[in-house]
Image (cartoon, rainbow, N blue to C red; front, side, top):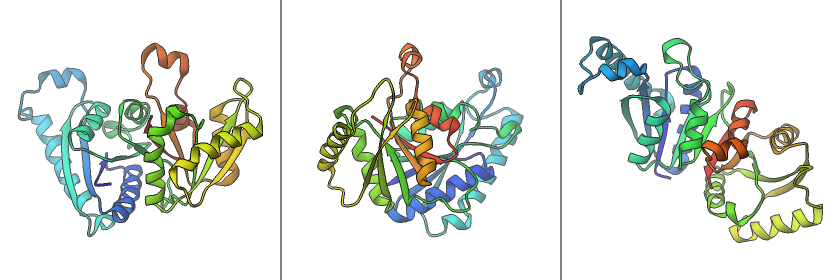
Length: 274
């Protein structure tokens, strides 16, 4: 892992996400790129010429540059390689575009932002980044003073479709010294006998040279409830999920478990595009 992108609105939740990113960067010697987006209404965007020549935009730009510089000098980032990017545009579009253009390996976001004008990450923005990003996204939930990745619940169906994204998750777990707790959720509409589920999972996991892991089968009414209830039972630090990033009609038909978990889970979540 070489580059970690941390979008920030300078809120407390964004600061918690930055602290989590700093911990990962120290383990991997990665660079942290701080990103702030001046998110303006469409009608204002249409008036802007190259150079941010509106007085109002200049005010927000200068204020944001000062805040970015201050954030880059925070104690949590001491000794790390840190750079800054300031953008003008729609939040989730700019996050995914900056990540693509800078060969980012991981996006770390707070799941809630500040109120008023700086309300960047509440509502649908984090979900939209998860849906559109081909890069792993770590969404930090809650108000922990320290973010831990010791016990990670990784829900999967252990099919070949998930194999490519699976290696990325395994690499992240190894990097952070996590104990993976692999989970298969049995639902009434997709039920597997225990011996069948265990055989599928262990055969799938053999190819990843995992020295230490746990595996569980959990029965629930649907996959989302199963993941949430199991994570609560084992007191997980983090939930890991693959996402298909479905859009349009396919999304209406299939839904998005990762996005639903983002809305309903009190725990931090990391998602990987399959």
